Image (cartoon, rainbow, N blue to C red; front, side, top):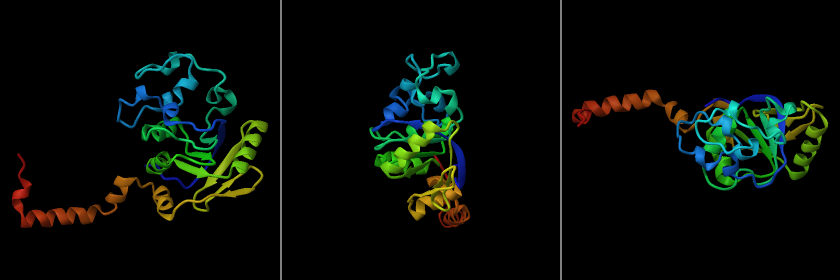
Length: 214
């Protein structure tokens, strides 16, 4: 998992409440569990005018010119700004996969659905909760200034605006540790790889028949 320390990027405003996971990555793309290739189908039904299917060449499809991610001023955006209850709906882990693989490193909203919120941390995507008033002000500033950028400093737990103003956010110490170190659940276990190997070697010395497989 990619570690998260400090990130500065262009902000894309998705001015919608209750963005569900089927909108983030529609159900027809859930057939794959390879954890790759989902970026082109992020927000597929909003982003394109035709229906998307797995294996399509995105370059041959019809983009929706009114959708925010298709607008030139938001190309290369890596911070997503949205409204309350982002990530509601089904628990599909493909949703944070798609956001991450599109290029987003953080999502800012007043609230998130619980399972989506947890899945983000397990995949290196930082969900940041700010107040509705703070989020509304950010929407106004993004609209007023093309190329609007924010800096997210995870160590200090602040979002830094272009004028230097800082917006603090909360994160549990364990989740912060995992993101800073780039540890997903497997990575956390592999910190103890030497002890695991030593245990397995000792176990086989005591019970050598366990080395035989059918």
